[in-house]
Length: 87
Image (tube, rainbow, N blue to C red; front, side, top):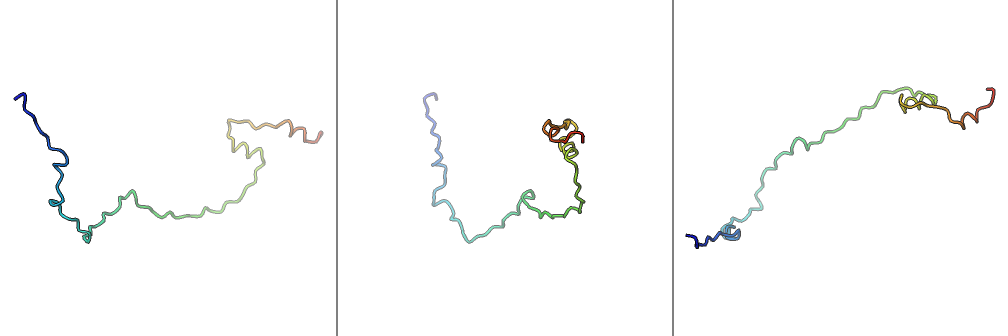
């Protein structure tokens, strides 16, 4: 009928009471599942690099390697002024 009322049970009514629940046994042990493979860490082995002779490059060549072909390495005006004339 149109004037009937429906009463829905609340969450407190649906939860089991303390008498209905079994106590948790603390002396029971359960097996711990193994960790996910993604969490495993592997030991990193450090392999020394082969000995390489140290090469000393002139400053202009070092700048060319460091900056790459996009930049042109030029001479500053202070470097030109410091150079002896006629040398």
